[in-house]
Length: 182
Image (cartoon, rainbow, N blue to C red; front, side, top):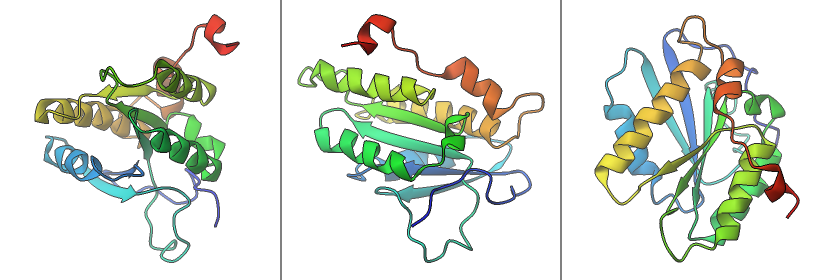
């Protein structure tokens, strides 16, 4: 199994591809549907996976992935560890505006604060945005879909004068220096 590389394939004209990675796959379908239902001026393809690496079979016909989204359910420790193990199969080029983390269940009182801190440190270490989503309501899923589409449009090169690298400098997650030493 090889690394998932951002620039290994040519882009398609006026098309953007997003890959949603979630271990439990509870939210992927609803989020994919919300992304496809949004009004947009470009074609969008949504791919879904439980984890990385992606299977080698079909690699030749797989389109270029413009945005890689790791969905983390903060209630489950296994969700965060699945993301950490999947990151080993991602080329560092994705950290330049083509990778983001989407956290769910952040408002839940039963979520240990250390888990959220670990996710923030992971996002900061990869210089990637960390988005939060209210997954219990349709409006929350729709809002997350809009945010992801905004990132996708830039990362796919569909916004004149804006690049994924520039987007990365504006949206990356930062962690205060005193929490990095904990």
